[in-house]
Image 1 (tube, rainbow, N blue to C red):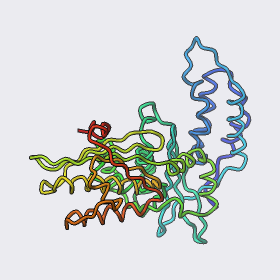
Image 2 (image 1 turned 45 degrees about the vertical axis):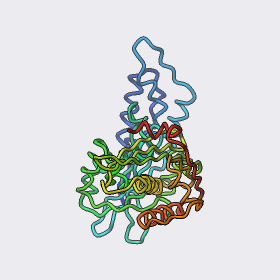
Image 3 (image 1 turned 180 degrees about the vertical axis):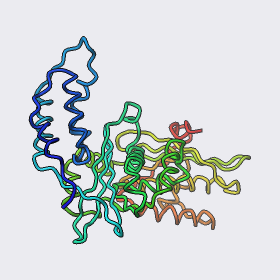
Length: 349
């Protein structure tokens, strides 16, 4: 049938009285964490207890309604916990990764012989203070790395479909945004056989329940696609080659800076086109729908808005690539600005 929760373990939680001090709370959470494999979004369910765990000896322990409600929700969940299954050979695994402001989470599953999706393992953890400041996409990358590392003994022998709102695999392997931390994660994931699948392509009760348990996670992802992303781009040619300087501001107001080097034989205008094309590709992978593009190249902006004709053969090829990418977004605003006005992009130098 599958792997079921030990009823003695659930009974121990059900019969536990609300804790009256920090030590009793730690004991309760120890019992709950023992069953973490069976509890979807456990970190989210226990997040409300975190302030109590940080209390100092002289501080008063107060168990209020929010704590009791969270405790009751966990007990209600354990009345009818899911039945997990071990992975079967010959069929791909499915890995779902999600992230929000304070939590990363994943679920490993597999279709059974009847084509019904069955959960294998739930996993989640709270983010530390430094990680909370990561962009949403970086949190998703960390979520993929964390889940694969923790469930390595399950994942490594199989081909795995990775279901996520954004293509984190392509993002992690993109040279243009590779940094030391993301590079470390990407390198660690090379030992696995991972294939990205958009989260919207999923169906079935198991994933539906998982997304309901993480509704606050998916709401933030959807929010990012409803407001406009801002893109500032600049290209500069000098004796050492051509440089690209860019700034992307997410709908939440989070800035991300980039500085790249291109072929030295590029002209100034080609470099500016390359700067724009590079970021449009990333915005597309991020799932952006509405974007505002600001650049200090009047020529590039006005050629794309068809105010200027493009007569140069090389620039025409760049314009065609950029126009094709622009057509993949729902709404695009192109705004030329002066070099002095492009202060945010100039900060990238």
